[in-house]
Length: 239
Image (cartoon, rainbow, N blue to C red; front, side, top):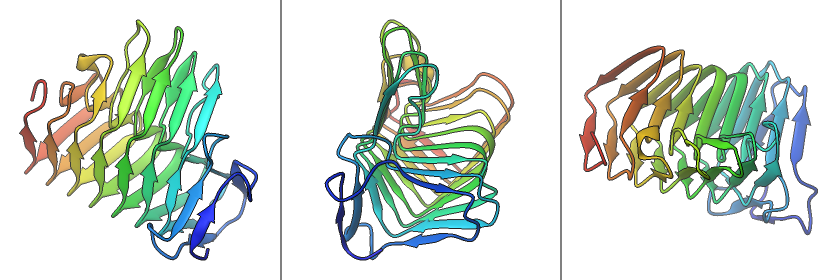
């Protein structure tokens, strides 16, 4: 994908890929190739792809969903039933998912998928449980499958709700997740006990990372296994 800004003036969002194995979407650089849905719809959706899918060196921003019953999830990147995904060298910013039920993963949502996120920047995304809803994972959510987040910055994201609980201002885990060599900073939520990283089941490992100055409790494990190794917790509401 060449350098340029791809918006809803030129493209129809969401950009959807269904059943394309071995697909590679390669940009010219995160500052050069910009996919911006301009708050019109989801940005990019990947369905039922079993071969390796690569999304690299581009920016995904401006995705927005507003729905009910969980359909308002995954505003930036949404992977459903994808067997082998690599997201590398990308910026995922300013995406917002809104749902009156459950809003999952404004920046990236993975479900039934195996996803590796490497050398990326997640900034300013928001999962918003509006009305009677709940927000889960301002930047990233995994509902089933596996996710490895490596050498990545997750900053200034939010999980919010109105009179309800919001979980995982930065990341919500209900699968198996490894966070390695990452910076998780300045994320916030409407419910401080919802955590910057919230694990609702499965397994969570945090290795060699820094979690600092988040406006919520740093890590919450509600269920499943959890381990943190060589990791700094500093200046959060509660470390």
